[in-house]
Image 1 (cartoon, one colour):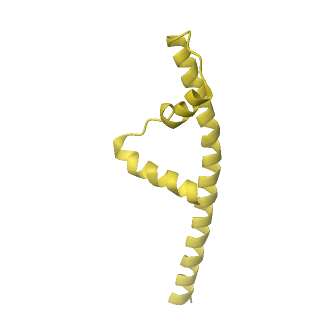
Image 2: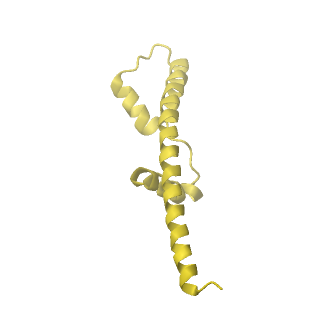
Image 3: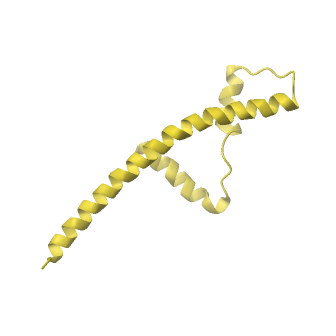
Length: 92
């Protein structure tokens, strides 16, 4: 027969394992997002070049695109969840 203390110990152990798995997941996802950020910058530059064919991009322009021009659309209802996910991924 399993005691309450044994169950509590197993729950703590399982939570710790879940926390570690989530940290690995967020780290892996963050690595993938870095690559997709690069792809999004390239896509934004292509779209801008189509619209403005004579436009030249400097390093400053690319930094600006990375900051504001490539963020994926997040519905307002999911914004809070997305911010939490990003913060957890950064500090996990």
